[in-house]
Each structure stands twice: as structure tokens, then as C-alpha cells.
Length: 397
Ligand code: SF4
Image (cartoon, protein in one colour):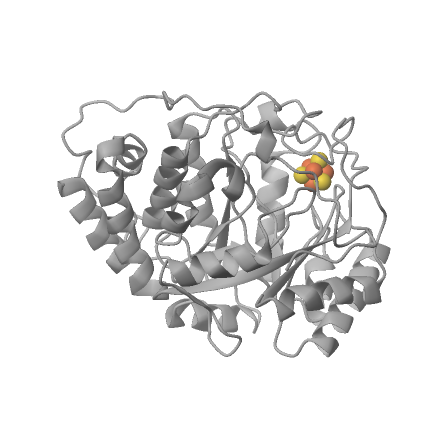
């Protein structure tokens, strides 16, 4: 298939595919799917070998958010029966983080609901970061606290944070349909603030919210332009009690096509399989490891994932290995650029050329505007988190 050969060549050279090529990946048939996975798998192996980085979420503050992100079970007016609690104390957060590290996680992601942190919240999280770093040698810490004000990224960096996550989530064109209390531009601004402060930027998307293929390609191209080091790909978990509860739009095959497209557009970036993998990929999860080089271990913010032990077995059974603490996740050119950014320069490099290629889609004149796939509502697979942070029960790690 000419399309796939072209995409592999471009991925190995870190060259940006054309939009038509990215759209053509999303329009491939089920018959072509294994070829698509194999092709994107070559690009994944070139930059990340067979390593899988494990990340562990600690929800520092759950629910009660004043923002109205439609996909989120913590949103304003959410009727989802999730855990609701205010800030964990540094030692509670550190204990939760330690469970993830003991399970094999290399990065701990500290997440708090809300529009963005106050300066007092930044103090609080700084103390938590210091406690985690003191008690877990070599662990990477990523903060995810919402929209940042001037100076806050620098303060988190000074406290020892390695990274900051803030997702674009969807295309600029559809952002207003998903959230009205802040804008796409606000989100871009925060990712840029994190980058400029020398934090490794982590920014990704949520698929399955009713968006078109064009929207998906738009957001992935926007991410490549922003040049984060890590791109989490979430598949919408349609929580009962949220406006998107009926949006069951994803099949395992579509999820794999989306992950392959992200890998081709962001070849040398940590592509992280995030929320919704168990719900939407189901028994096809191991195939996704050929596309992504990073996953979350155990539970998510407000929902339960599969057992941490099952994650580790899946990685071993599929022939991959958990990335050790002594290994640098990013390819050398990106790691060097990040080290440079830490010295105060915003290194916008390492993502290859930004020109589109000339090759069109293989054999197809037109690409459907939206996926014509039918998916069954699997509400039986959505389990609200009832263990770990904010409870008396042991975390899943
Ligand atoms: S995504 Fe974040 S800002 Fe939006 S409603 Fe959920 S917790 Fe609040």
C-alpha cells in the first residue's frame, strides 16, 4: 500500500504527513487495519523500541469543578456519582504516588479539578511534589492543574515538577461545542507557558465526542505545531450524568486507526494511551502497544481501569518491556531540546519539518467527513473509581 510506505518513510524522517494522508489512515478498511498497525509500529520502534512507559495518576482534588467541559464527570452540574473530595495532603498524595511507583510507574501525574490553581494551590502542590521526590528517587512528576497564570509554571518547575499536562482535547473549530467556560486559546496559552518555563509539555486529545475525521486531524496537527513531548490520547468514557453520556462512537478498530494517525503525525513524541482504553479497545488493547509507547497503570481520575497486574501481564505477553527508571523516554534529539529549554530558551525543535508532503491518499478520491462506524454502548465496562486516593481502600497499582 503506497500510502503506508510513504507514511513509514516520513515517520522515520520525522517529516509531517499531508492532511490527506492523515485522513486516509482514518478511512482505511478493517481489512487493511493490521497493515496500518504494522506500519505505524515500525515508526514507534524506530523512536522508542519495545519500551512501554508507565504513568500513574493521583487525583489530588476530585469533582466540584466550576467549568462545564461536557466530557468530564467532575464538571459543573455533573450527576455522575464520582468521588468528591478536596485537596489531598502532601503525605496522602505521596503515599498514593508510592503505590504507583512500586507497581512500575516512572511518572506520577498529579491532577486537580478546577479552572486553574490559585497561588496558594501552587504552594500546596509544590509541597506535594517535594514530598514525592524525596520519597521516590528518580520519579518524574507531571502536574495537571488547569489554566496557569503568569509565573505559576516557573514556580512548579522550581519545586521540582518535570512536566505539565494540559490537553487541547478537540479541534479549535469544535471547542465551543464542548466547553463554554474557557476557550481553546486559553488552553494553547497554558501549554505555551509550561513549555516556556522549561517544563516538558504534555498535551493531547479526547476522541469519540462526535467529532469528524477532519476535527481529529486538526487537533493532532495543532498539537504537532505546539510540539509537546507527550501526547495522551483519551477515548471518551461516556459517563452517565454528563452531557456526552450517549456518545458511544468508538470501535476498537477506530481507536487503533486514531492511534496510528497520531503516531504518523507525531512520530518521535511519547504517544500515551490514556482514559478509555479498557472500555473501547477491550481485547484489542495489546495491539495498541505497537502504536503507543506509554500507558497509565491502574485507575484513572474518576473511573477504574483494569488491575495493574493485568497491565503488566499484557505488556509482557505482547512482547514489550516496561521502561526502567534509568532509561530516557524521549529520543536523544528531543531530550537534548528539553534540556536546552530548561536553560531558558523555548526550543521548538525535534518534531521534524512542518511542510506537508505531496502524496495523496492511496486509491481513494474522497475521504468520509465522519466515521461511519457503529458502536455498542458498553456501560457495563464503566466503573466509577471507589478505591485509592480519597478513599480508605488500597489503590490499584
Ligand atoms: S476537564 Fe478539568 S476544567 Fe473541565 S470540568 Fe473537568 S475538572 Fe473541570
